[in-house]
Image (cartoon, rainbow, N blue to C red):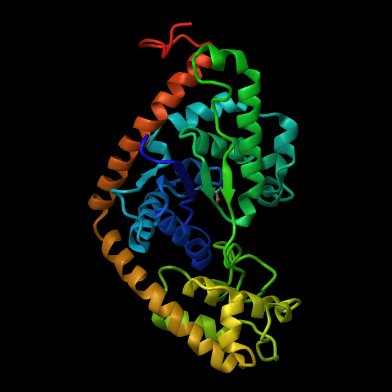
Length: 353
Ligand code: TRP
């Protein structure tokens, strides 16, 4: 642990229908993070998933499927720590303590809650409202320094920083007395960006690609085979113009911008570089190139996911191993937090003050 400069944490919800947006916006970047001087933790956030009702049998399958996607995409479970949230009790435990740090007014500003709760706010679960506090606990149980997330999670990361700061302030003297210096929790940096920070629907370039869109044609699922990918890209909405040769030319053309962004992210290049090759091209020639690239990238992941999902015992062993290693980091954090807050706990206080 101490050998690393950074600690990277991120999470993906096991709510089914993993798609290209999850891959390009999250999982692919998780793989890249492994090249940094960092301990990476990648968590299947099942406690978050049940903030909306999940069928138990389906949930179990979805937890294993997200894990399979992590591994198939290239997350190495030896180098990184891959686990599901509910196996590490410190997440829920720290969330309670943070419930007493976070303010009602802060949570009332969370736009994702408003979106997800919709008009029937009174009938939303308390868990859905409290979701961002649990997310802060996920991150801070490991005192993570960096969190790769999509654009839509920016506000939750800001809340995490506010909670860390308020905890550091509220308990300042106790933090010092226990020998942790000025601040106990780091002010975590979000890592947002890349050409695919937002992958949009293939049917409507102004809407995010989403697992809950009723149209299958709006998204490329990680379980889609080559034929399905080809069909969906072919049917993707476009406009009648050729591709521009400059990025500025994509303004006001959300569908064109989205397809160019997807191409760029799959290739690991910028939109500019895509337009260097395809500026002036019609969609009738750009789309087949995009199909080839998407199939080339996703087919091996798809095949490996299938292979892994067929062996749930192996997946479960990876998760159990990851949970043990995660807990070895989170448990000392929680011990320290309990001492700082003033709880009496089993075992020796980290420093008897
Ligand atoms: N809320 C995140 C999402 O929907 C998932 C998540 C839960 C997460 N806990 C996290 C992401 C901690 C980063 C860090 O995408």
